[in-house]
Image (cartoon, rainbow, N blue to C red; front, side, top):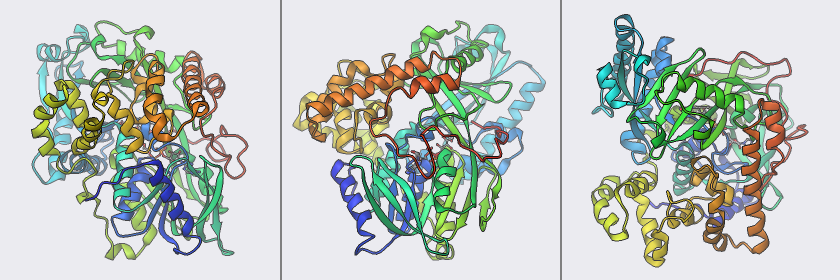
Length: 604
Ligand SMILES: Cc1cc2nc3c(=O)[nH]c(=O)nc-3n(C[C@H](O)[C@H](O)[C@H](O)COP(=O)(O)OP(=O)(O)OC[C@H]3O[C@@H](n4cnc5c(N)ncnc54)[C@H](O)[C@@H]3O)c2cc1C
């Protein structure tokens, strides 16, 4: 398979191809709106069925919820409490498929301790639940087990694995396995895989209008290239709307009353340096409302999440001081050495697309699972929302099946057998790892980091380094990354701005206390020449990221969402979104005019 790079030129070619659908090249089979995990999954599903496919994203790939999750690929132990075995089994099937076949470089096993307060009944209850979890996984895969099975630990065994767990916090634990993934990276990899199979993909391209026939059927869309401000039209047999918490705004462009009702609920995470908490596994803790995870990553811990109704700006949710205090307080209930605000080096906030029951009036048909819904408010338009990162592939399959109707019988989804770029040949590169590391002077953690991020595409980075050996060196002010990774972000991974590199290709925005600001100059030195920046553009890019970082820090000092939003919006986006439909400003509220529904429990 030819692996296509996402470059500025590739984006331009995609825009040209989309534009031509209005002139001589006829219509697309599928135009996907929204480049989060759902939209990216749909683009891959559609193009691998042999359908001509385009996908547009208003911001950078994965800028919405899909870069702001807990980053777990999991069945959701909580759903077992609700006796939703089908859902758990489906998610575990997807987890195991990703880890064994589709993206073994990106998705990695991670174990969790479920601490027990009661020796007898709780051990029996939790033990039975986790055993069922493991059984559902082995049933679902039908192949070799992808994960180790759970184990019961005594208090001593538990403390050996997690020395910083408070002695009186638990009498023992059950250790079970799930998986984690860099969510933004998963999305970018999905887009790149879709493009490699022929999809036309353009980030920073916004849907502003849907074209309809006199009878109301959707026939295409008006898009805006936000890099240039140019408006253009695209014709498509099927437009699939995968815009997450923006669903109600974008589906309204079809000017029907129908569609899905989607509200937003906010969840935040904090990031704490790895050495601050001594432990070799994750923790899952019950809270009043949901669960709190303490998740180990290579250099830090991710702790979250919260679940609060949200009515502010959809594009820039931030963690408030109240959110951060809540997470710290709950983590400290089990930590022997309590953490404080000073230990928090980063935060992020994401918005859950909360599907409300039923569909709006006029929606002719809908396929509903407990997690996600696919609906068609009018012919030519399919809307999908809900679900979770883990089950993106199932959502994508359902959306495309639904959109193409009876054609799905002769063109079924094949994505369960389509490895993402970087997966093919992974085992070979793993075997060559020692030699590669020796050649470029990398230690074991560096090599693991690179294999995890690029898999078998690592050779594309080493080719760059062979031409410019200095690219093998770590950045001076962000040493977790080497120069080649930053350059590769724009030569192969579709980054167009400093923002894209610091937010999504690397995660410097939350991985360093300075949000990566100290590394801006060296990153700009690397990417500026490739992106054709003159001095003024370079200064504008640096100033915009600095302003964003300062606004995020200031917002995190505010107590509530309303004041945090005001402070955050002081920094303007590098390519601001346009108001959609009757929208007045980017912060207009989601949800139906009749008011908010109840937030469904979330099963991270
Ligand atoms: C705090 C939190 C933790 C979570 N943890 C987990 C987890 O651990 N595991 C798990 O499996 N799931 C998890 N989830 C759920 C998961 O993250 C989401 O279900 C998923 O990311 C939603 O993806 P999406 O593509 O539907 O939406 P999004 O990622 O929001 O994508 C929608 C995209 O549409 C774009 N868009 C909007 N309007 C337009 C327009 N007019 N034109 C073009 N583009 C447009 C937006 O810019 C956005 O990028 C979590 C969610 C939250 C909030």
